[in-house]
Length: 200
Image 1 (cartoon, one colour):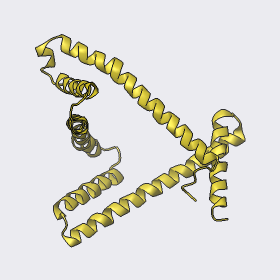
Image 2 (image 1 turned 180 degrees about the horizontal axis):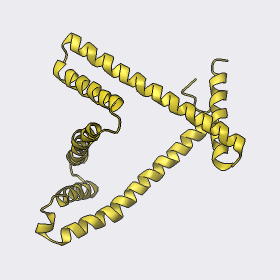
Image 3 (image 1 turned 180 degrees about the vertical axis):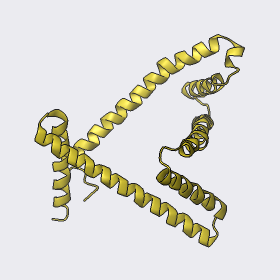
């Protein structure tokens, strides 16, 4: 019974949302809106729980003296940003935090991915086949073509970069998105048909 009830609830909610997606009826729309609102509330509580776990984990690290500097920086940044977001929503201070702290960090992480991609190609394949060479050369070319001096080297470098991004990279991204979408559909069907039930 402990397994049947969660499975039944999950299947019923999933089918209701599926019907709401295809059928335009006031009652079905209302039930779908209630379910979406419930999911939003659950997500908010999950975010709050994750925040509390993060705070408690780094508070314990501070007590033990295990990497206290990093934990202290994380806690100060987290609590400071949270305080600004709660006390001054939509203010210039919050905009400044996003523009000059969050976005530069995000750009730095994205830039580091280029180095990780090149090193991963070298370590995984050791450049033993043609595919590894193509991947490494194209990664290095795109990395160098993003620099401001790329246009000074040759006017064809930005053109080649734009073509690579518009054609092969876009095609690869579409393939990845299609694969992810098919995987999501397959997972959803397995949950709807009660083949998989990780919640029970």
